[in-house]
Image (cartoon, rainbow, N blue to C red):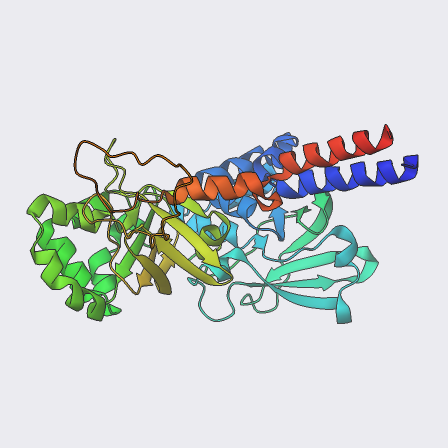
Length: 397
């Protein structure tokens, strides 16, 4: 094989490897620049850093320690400060070059504050304007057209993944700085009751399971709420459970971490629940097919049909079925295959009675076997090793 071809294949291998890895980490980026240590700290404690890292296209308007001191002097409550910082995260890519190539000299772009759904009207949008003398101004759309801050420099750019740009001072927004209720003050069951999940909320209250849900809100909580018609149809089965099993079933509908819709789509796999306790796994598998996200328990597959509330660290989804754990209900077995005739000439007769029931298929084992037999199961590192081995083998011919 010509050296040029070998080099091309190796380059392709490295590209696939790095594409499969996490593209950026805002904490590590800012850690290389001590002048942003305060900003970096508050991105971490407000959990904004984790959300930034999960997004594929993002721009962070970084504030140095002096600018952060100005913002902190307002003594904003913790969750209000989070809203203000989320206003400094644009959900689009703006590198230093793009700032000076804005069509018509000005652009309106959405922020992470807008994405939370907590920003009324257009208050979660930022105006970016290319000014005279090579300057670029930034201002909240709801701030009477004022451009509060100027572009200072590019801290780091990974086109078209993440851009970290320093701006001169914090952006002002009355809506972002408005008092924000802490998640622990949110009445979870009241929210569900008003939006089509009253029956499920009533079960949480009557069983006492609501206390466990409320205790997990501050640390992060995702709730999957069956709608009222779904609970009505399920009630005969629910009434047959013991009190402890009723609680376990209800806790099975909560995950003790915040999982946005985007996170669910990108983090497919097994999830523990509030009911998980050592050997009692009480887990299920999250899968997605495009925009459709499903929860698979081996007993039933439920689909997410909507979002009741999304204010990190709490998010509540509507689902179209009650989640049934294998710890309480028998798994659904795959259809049995027709028995193949034995090639042995000698018939072996067992001493005891024989069962005609087929062995239960292990979906996890089936998936592992599929992955071992196909390229689709290879991760970035495995694919790299295969291509490198191919290059070496061919070059020796």
